Length: 271
Image (cartoon, rainbow, N blue to C red; front, side, top):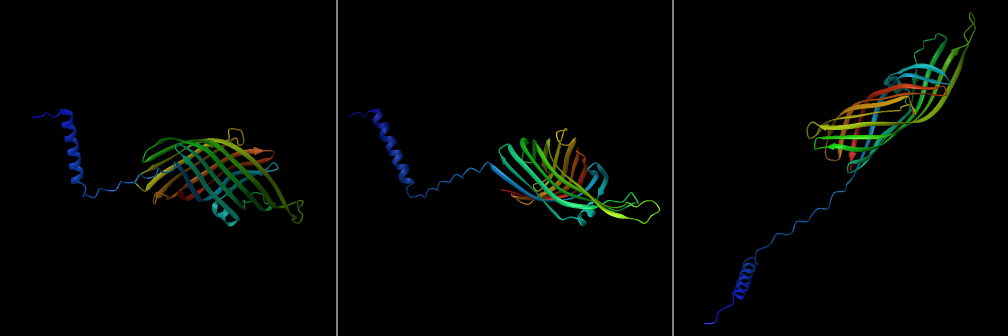
């Protein structure tokens, strides 16, 4: 009897088993391969139109004429001509570019402390632009923490008007209209931090704070606003809080040592 080489026998057995397996499963429908989803873009954009119902308190002045200023939002709203505000943020990975702008054309009457002044009013046209480079130092599913540094552009036009009695003592009143105005533009460097903490899948708390000026523009400038928010879905959320912006700036007879504060509300759209 002729002997079969062991390697030839093993090859025949492998061929037989492979062929038998293919024959058994030839009639069974195989599942279609699952497509691999395209990787999500690393870029993220956030747009937030917001409303800031701010009053003004402190000291304002033009041409070395300083006056105490205390205008609640209700007084400001009576003379509000225009306001526009919003935030735009771009992120990629841990880095982000944050921008925020606010424009308002407002004014109001100041309480008279001099009986010889019939009417005292302040008109304020203000444009504020914040730009900052941010770095995310900590992130989990519930908490984010960003550090940032940037600059705040301030452009303010102040106009002080009054009806003043210039008559001599014991004579009939003689009121004249006086108007003085000045415009100043300056930039304040600042540093700050921002955090967001999700209490549930929808409810979150957020805090923003910065400090700057350092004598470059303002002697001191700072801003803070805590908010509470609600995340409706992956792309839309809303927040409500209280915002304070403080400036202490003087230059060339112009004084803007004021604190603006009031209710803050905004809608966030992420894409």
